[in-house]
Length: 384
Ligand code: TYM
Image (spheres, rainbow, N blue to C red):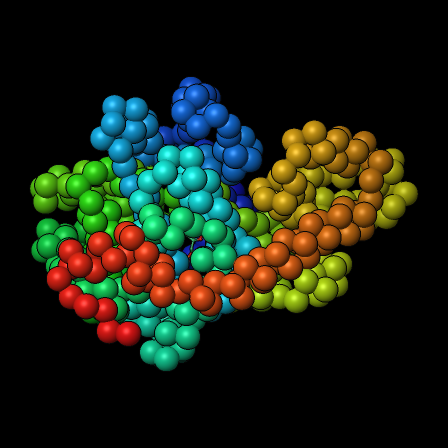
């Protein structure tokens, strides 16, 4: 692969991603200063995910805000594929989703694609997937969503999704699915149907649906947008993030299947310092002397990027660290320790909330206001 090439699909992110080019390739829109100003005027503030342009691209976000202003409202939808323990890159879209739910006070649907991971991952058994679904739901609940406005469901449990998915599937040809997802004749037939399952939650309400997610998930929304209006629903709107870079370097993304590239939400907080010292890629010079003379490069530094994306809330602190780095006033070891402390503190709190979440699983899946409504509407009782 040439140095300027990259690949972004729902299953793979390879190379150094050029996000401007991706906007062109995918046919999405950049989040402009005007749109940000509008969000600020509606919510009173902007989270760092938007201020720092980690969420950088969208589809129909302007129409979502218009619907909100004019009283039609909208709902949120996001999800997780339970193929293993969650890492920090997976949880960031959920924090942004929480911010959106807190500010706009809207319903949120969280899809757990147990079917997807069973179908796509050769080595995952049905029971592995069920176990990861439960574990991942704990991490998601720990983010702190509104229990009355949030419904978490697993595809293999909540039958309404299948009912909507068959209506979608009937309108999507194999040739479209192949062109969008690159399926070949070796794909099992479940994989070919699956895009309809991921598109289905956009039709859980007859209002516009806004999906916060990594930009790797956009191909699903393209399929949905082709057929939604034929079925009497709105085209899905989306707000896309970049990728949290791997601990080990700026190419690709943090990935659960390559353990040294990621910090997992269940990692012991005291192990983080060692992990960062051992694996974190920085933009530093080979020696402290050269670093002091020439300065480092925060643009390619994972430590700086993680601070920028999630761990350094304070804009002034971030700017100061940037300047100190390029002026050679700070060494990489120092930045690693600073980030390690931030991550450890975050994990400590997260893991406490994760314990408490065990008591809340039934609420988010069955008993909260929205969950109860959706089960009643589906006309079936959950099997618990
Ligand atoms: P999954 O479980 O691979 O990822 C969950 C969410 O995390 C994002 N993501 C990342 N974001 C930043 N940096 C990374 N390194 C990184 N890795 C993953 C993903 O884009 C996603 O937003 N098929 C989906 C599950 C799903 C879904 C949805 C996701 C079902 N419905 C609706 C988003 C929206 C999946 O396997 O995601």
